[in-house]
Figure 1 (cartoon, rainbow, N blue to C red):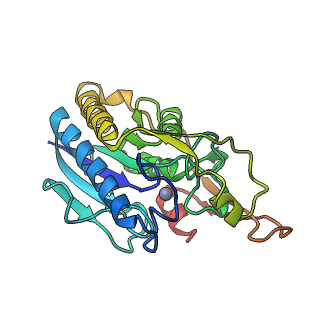
Figure 2 (figure 1 turned 180 degrees about the horizontal axis):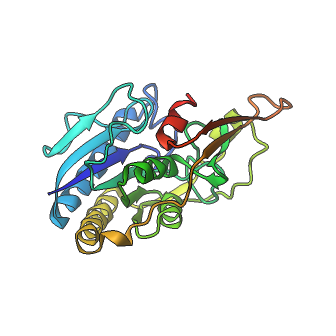
Length: 269
Ligand SMILES: [Zn+2]
């Protein structure tokens, strides 16, 4: 009876064409964006069920909210609220699956690229650069829950495969811009990575369904094939911020914890 934690975000879905129109409540296509994400999540759940998983907690991880509860798969439970890391994931889960994920700040050929918000240049733990995927992978390391599936934009899927070998990555759109844009302000970076080629929503759902089924079969047949990131305590988190205005200095914040990655990240915000 495999139980899967499903982490969701909006920016990495196929058909989410830009940030401001599609993933913000004031955006003109926000409701469509929620429908796209929710249907991608449903496709992943169908795949996870086909592979043999039985229980699903869907965490709505997009800042403003990205899941439409009216459209969500009947087999899913939905988590939403002001909850600390790691969003009620615990060691009772057998695997983590991602839907709608985007690559970390600074990644070339990624779409709507950022980590947490467009003001971060990079977040690292003991020198290992992590985005939103990497943060969850680190919580998974602490709790003994492996990342098994990473659905989102191409650059996100490749980032996941590099950080946690064995994870099944599925890309549904490809960003068209290089990066190397650490000198940009937050506002400039927010507008800088909005070009992509998307596959159709239907094809995205098909790929996600197939990949999720494969991930659960791997989990059942060879659980040791899923690897955690390699980081050892004590932990040091470093966050580098962009300048908010042209000419202002960039700044860096550091936090440390002797033994817990979860406590380390919760000390930051
Ligand atoms: Zn995000």
